[in-house]
Length: 105
Image (cartoon, rainbow, N blue to C red; front, side, top):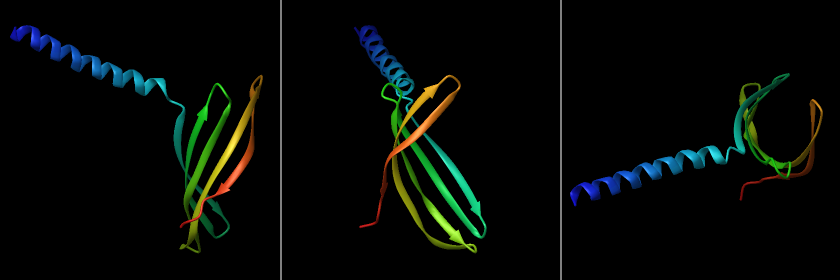
């Protein structure tokens, strides 16, 4: 009886771990990229969070970060950009459909 209970618990545990592993690999339609942009005396430290649907060829990129002028923090940036894309042979074209400026409450 104890052996059956042990095997049952082991099976449930391994099944749960396998489910977590496959769930992680099944939904990879998001990624994050840190970006630093320099222009004259301005620097922007940004994080780009891409969320997209391969089937619909649509997505949203959330842009957030801070910008500095003369090495002093000048403000914050927060935008959500909706986009669609099309593919033609070896090139991909992204077209923004909506830009939302997110402001603090």
